[in-house]
Length: 200
Ligand SMILES: Cc1cc2nc3c(=O)[nH]c(=O)nc-3n(C[C@H](O)[C@H](O)[C@H](O)COP(=O)(O)OP(=O)(O)OC[C@H]3O[C@@H](n4cnc5c(N)ncnc54)[C@H](O)[C@@H]3O)c2cc1C
Image (tube, rainbow, N blue to C red):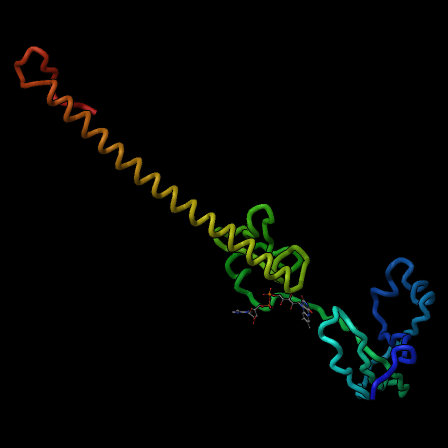
């Protein structure tokens, strides 16, 4: 059964949320929007109609789901959609176990340094980090950002190691050149210009 939007139930059913009524002006806002609060537990939800597939080529389209909501007090209301909020917490203890500093239960990331944490080599991306964003584009973006930073760090380490090795090699070559020149110019003991063994 399809449900024309104009006749679909429009006033939402709320199970009382402390945030809504404790926020400044919260109660007035609910009154203004004629939102009735049912401070009750939802006992069961019955589906009355299912949304049609809609036109997937459109950015958005109306959906006509309809549900019958049975409240614990015996009242029954019909609604088209539900909003839900759940508490969330880190599912994994891997970060804290490694010593990553937490802020509000999330892994603290340094945004200026590719989302690195206080533990060298450990980066915090996606929902787990402290930037407050929890969506898929953010998870992808933050992962990419950390990967690029990490890549540059690894290349920097490789370059530094190569420079250090090159300098050491060059110093050895330079020292050998000086020693060889000394021995050639110095001559043998007893020669006029002989000045002793080469000293570093
Ligand atoms: C109901 C719901 C609807 C959502 N709808 C949308 C939406 O429409 N659009 C949108 O952009 N975002 C939506 N999101 C948010 C989105 O899903 C997340 O922001 C995104 O998935 C975060 O990606 P993530 O890689 O950081 O974490 P996750 O996707 O949570 O991935 C973490 C992975 O780590 C694994 N894991 C945990 N512990 C360990 C361990 N110890 N060892 C190994 N693996 C481990 C988990 O199993 C999981 O696979 C929704 C979220 C929920 C809950």
